[in-house]
Image 1 (cartoon, rainbow, N blue to C red):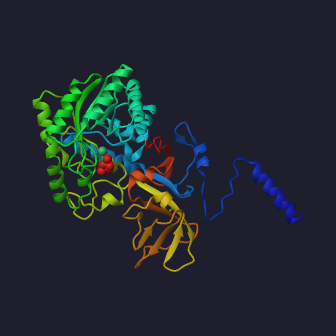
Image 2: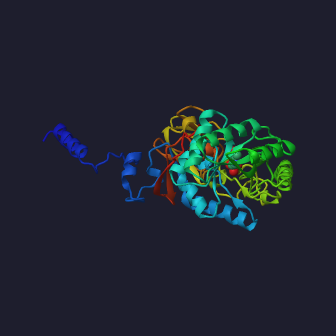
Image 3: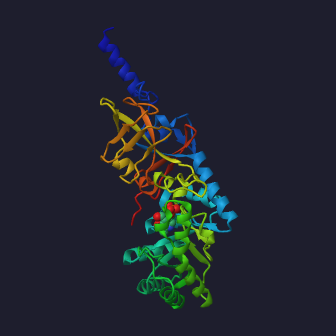
Length: 414
Ligand SMILES: Cc1ncc(COP(=O)(O)O)c(C=O)c1O
């Protein structure tokens, strides 16, 4: 039989057989759809390694994720303060459920669409930490409150509180509200003290609203380098909120909720008198930004939590000395700094400035070099915006892909 006939017959055999995949020996990989087809009734029907994923793809290491959730919950329980993790980080109802099962009292959402997505996927206890100011968003928030009695929303001005009240009354509902207090960064929130008290008193009187307390998140303190400096700033910046908490109490207003804090201050926040819960976000994944801030035990490296979120990328070009090019650039990694880190390797640096391409540069005595088709695993720069770039998260135990989790609130930015 001539060669061409044989080739044609082989082609027909393999192209009609569903199980036959063309996998060149050097670049073993499955498409997302192929892996999705192997994931039946919540379990993987085959052994797929994270190194076989089509790239760029986003992975979470289950051992690290579970350890992070346990460490956070244990520490907060020991410090007698609750956790209300922020869903803006993972945008995943699956991870929110893990956090609630571990003992969290609720989940935070940054956007009304994020809160809707959580609710649609079974997460009811949601506190939205951003104020809704437009008629559209207020209507959506009230619709959500109508469907979900556990939804709580923030407000930071008298004008906004009146709009919330009007909307709630017109829909025949009562909406639960907390006052967002500014820690001094002037990003959101009302001035602590008398202005915040006046807003609390107004909410308490307005029809259609129930005041549940206050929140005060100080983003500016979370990444302060060195534990002592971070502790000092965190406690100082929350003093105004504690004054407000005292004013609410002495005026008979609810302080059932006094929420604040994050991954950088989780083991400091219990020292803020009155604070009921910590809105920790990044700790589930960790990232290069947080690893740099230093912890209570080690001023250089923040090792309280383990990096669990990684990007798998493939080398596209190895022809030039001192470097190689990968398929994970800004659209896979963002351009946040510090740049992603190559997991488990030393003597190399990575940049993701080009849209579709990443650059790996070898420095002195790199722990290894790469050739075309090799896979590289990256620790992300800043977890929240990276998660928002992917539809799915591959949940990996050891090397094996154990589950595929949809990032249900991905792109929910309205
Ligand atoms: C209002 C609010 N709460 C909590 C968090 C979580 O912070 P972190 O990721 O530092 O734990 C954020 C993060 O930006 C936030 O904006």
